[in-house]
Each structure stands twice: as structure tokens, then as C-alpha cells.
Image (cartoon, rainbow, N blue to C red):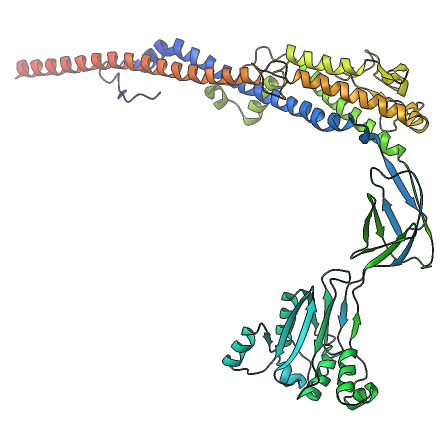
Length: 547
């Protein structure tokens, strides 16, 4: 705690009072530094435990929690006789062969407008009425997603008429850019290609429900004027030509001839994908189907649309192997880390640095010094040893499978000899025949053979092994509720309390240092004051006799 005392001494006496007072305060400062170092060690210990506990809990709550259930080993894979169809089997898909036929792929509605033939190429900013000769006030309608958007094409529309149109829910546009923006906001993709002078419109997704239509009413006054221009634009299609012909007692051919229509906009309808599986037909707005828990995906139409595609589902032996291999890898990483912490080199002679010591060292030197201590913080820790032995011990036990007791060795899984294993890897397990493990590579792969010949035994063994290890780890994480929280293998409550105690102790010792220093500063201050007074009196007397 800082002192408010003015600490100015030694001015009269010439004594090095700072050094003298520091010497008096040294015992208290030494106790304070020791307390601070203990608090630092407490913090580093908590950090070390949090790190390894996180890995222990992760192995327990994820891998073991999953692998103790038989469903973890229920792996299937599905192959098809034609790459046009791919299938991902669900967890409950039975083994066997099914038949499928692709009837149709999902398509998005698409409109490719005609080339717009204006007096000059459109940039998108020109008035459609002036540039294309569309009747001022002509209306078109976009229908998509169960919603209609009425659009008015107008030039120089009065504010009153525009307000009336908008009040009726209509969108007023003047230029091609306006039209494109309204179409986009109404739920379709739209773009005017200035290089090709064509309007492109498409649905935002595949399927019948996402399809759209652009229509216009050409039966009223001014229809003839607008029709030719809108056909060029691509808004008016075959339906518009047919409607106009019927309302005017003409044939469609006559209409096209009269208006000089050589081609109409190309419109592709939005369609659902259709797939037949075992004789039953299914529909999807995209090319993916969820059928009885499995996912069927149409990649493309087969060259023969009548082809019967066989869908074969079988046990995924490689998938089961991967479950076991991944679990053992995580186990190895965990026990190796625990062994490394337990067998860490001693850091005897190393203690947390004081601020004064750090000032005399480089950042790299400080980091190396502190790392030396942190790496050895759990060296020979009894709690760590207890947890590690509980975990490794569970892996060596026999497990009842059917009418016999089996061990990991029955599946070609074991550890190296004590003297052959590298440091901190004596508990690590290796799978014979695993090409990714130099210890097991080249040996007979008993595990794969067992998975192929007796998958039930493999499932039962590793399910029970995971369950036993899961239970053991749970007990270690809840053995002493007085000193540790749930899912903690170390005494986190005790360490937290110790940290609080050290904080209190440090505060008390800081006050003691301050008190000691204040005490001696006051004493030396009084001495300086008396010396100053004496010096003043002597000066006065000397002046008197000198006079």
C-alpha cells in the first residue's frame, strides 16, 4: 500500500538514509517477494491443470461418450452402379441392394430475352418507352413464389399518377436498370447484358415452386404498340401471342407476321427432380432426396434415362477401423502429455523472477526461465500419477465378450517394450498393420481381420472398453467435491482458495513494508529537522560573535 508520507531525508546529515531504511525493510520485502512468487506458482499450476484437464474432459465427454454406444460402430457405406446417382447411407439403413431410376433433374426457371433492336444500343439508362416504343403506362406482371408484382413502364409520369400507381401496389419503372432492380427485389435474378442487348431473368432456386412467369395484357387499347416491343424485350412470349390472336380473331402465324416476330424469348420452366426408388417415385425441389434416413443425390442424367441403377449398402469396415484408430490416437496423445508433465526435468533452483531481475534480462531469457518452471510444475504430481495410472490400467483389463475374456492384444493392439519405447510413450498403444504407425506397420493386421470376420465382437469389446474407461474417468473427476468441482481431476477449489489466501497475504505484507519504511522515514525526518534547527542556531551564534 502506498504511503502519503513525504519521504525526503539525508539533506542535512548527508547520510544515505535510503539504503539504511531499505536495510530495515529488507526482511519484510523478502517475505513479500516470497509470497508473490508463491502466488505466481499457484497461477501457473492452475494453468497447467486447466490445460491437461481440458484434454482429459474432451476425451471423456466426446470420444468415450460416443464410443460407449453401439451406434458408434454401426458404419455403413453405399455404392451405386452409375455415378449419376450418389447415396450416403443413414445410420439405420439395412445392408442390401436397392434399385433406382433417375426420371428428371431439378431445373431453375430461366428466361433469355430476344436481342433488343432499338435505334441505338441500350446502356440501361434510357427510357423504355422512347427507346423501344412501348406504350406509356404499359403493365407487365411477375409471378413467383405465390406472389405477384405488377410493374408499370412509364415515361414522364406525373407525381399524382405515380402516387396512385404505388398506392395500388404497382412498381413504376422508366429504364432497363429500373426494371432489373424491381425484378431483383421481387424475388428473381435479373440482368441486362449490354454486350448482347438481352434481358436475362432466372429463378433464385430450382424446382416448380420457385419458378416464375413474366406476362403482359395485350388485349386492350394500345396492345399492338406494346406487343412488338415487349416481345423484343422478352417479356411477351408464346402465351401473349396466342392471347392476342384469340382476342383479335387471328392466327398466331398472322400475329407474328404482322408484328415481324421472328423468334420469341426462350423460357425454361422450373422443374422438380424426380427419382424412383424400388418402384416408388419421389420429388424434390433440388437434386437431393432424404429417403428412409439415407441421402440420395442426383449428379446428372444418365446417358440412358431408362437405366436401372443399383444401390448397394454394406458394412463400412474402414469406418469401424477408423473409430478404433481415432480413439487410440487420442488416448496416446493424452497419456503421452500426462507422462511428459509427470516426468518433466527438475527446475530446482528456478523460481519466478522479480521485477528487478526481469529488468536485467532479455525477453527471450525471461521466456526460457519461466518455461523451465512451467514445464515442471506438475512434475511427480501424485494426483496426475493417480489419474494416469487409472486410465492406463483400464486399457490393460480383460473384457467379457460372449463366453470369453478378450484383451486388446486379441485385436493386435499393444504397447512397445519398456526399453524400446521412447520417453513418455511407454503407455502408448499401437495397432499391428497400421501403415501410419512405424511400430505396427508391416505386421499382420488383426484388427481389420476381426472387423471383417466378427464385427459384433469388435463392437462389443470396444463399446465396453470405452464405457469402462468413461466410468473410471468420471469417478476421478468427481471423487472429492470438497476440493474439486465437477469434471475436474485436480483440486481446483483448493488452488483457488490458495490464490485468494496469497492475495490477502501479499496485501498484508505490502502494508508491513510500507509501515516499516514510514516508521524509519519519520525517525530520520525528525533527526534531520533537529539537525536543521541546530545548524540554524549555530549560524546565528556565529553571526553574533562575528559581528
